[in-house]
Length: 129
Image (cartoon, rainbow, N blue to C red; front, side):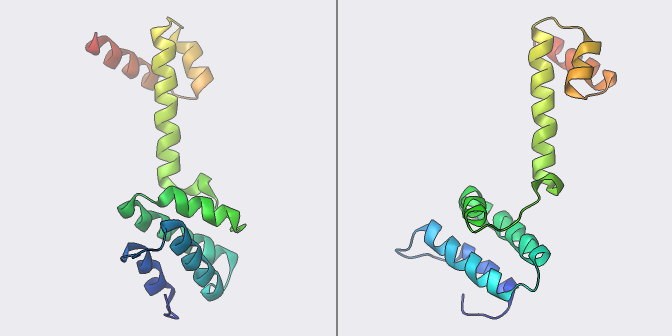
């Protein structure tokens, strides 16, 4: 945490916190990264890296919450895991609509999935039954 190298500060998230809470340690790391970052874009990139490392300790949600509380700008729409989650959500919605008997064309329009993707989901659903 005392390092002047952002990469080393990031690694503090996987260290032993001792008696300190993960939230408090996260706040300290974020303040240090803010101090060391030359721009908002760099800070945002570092917070994303910190969040990824935080998954090793199951605290990535805490990291994001604290970053947002510190008004650190995060563009989740470019995050690969966020995009993957959105795609999975579309598929889950499409599966539920298929179970309700809606037409594939309607499901395609509503979810933004292609007709081919909806058809594949229908086949997958039929295979489970």
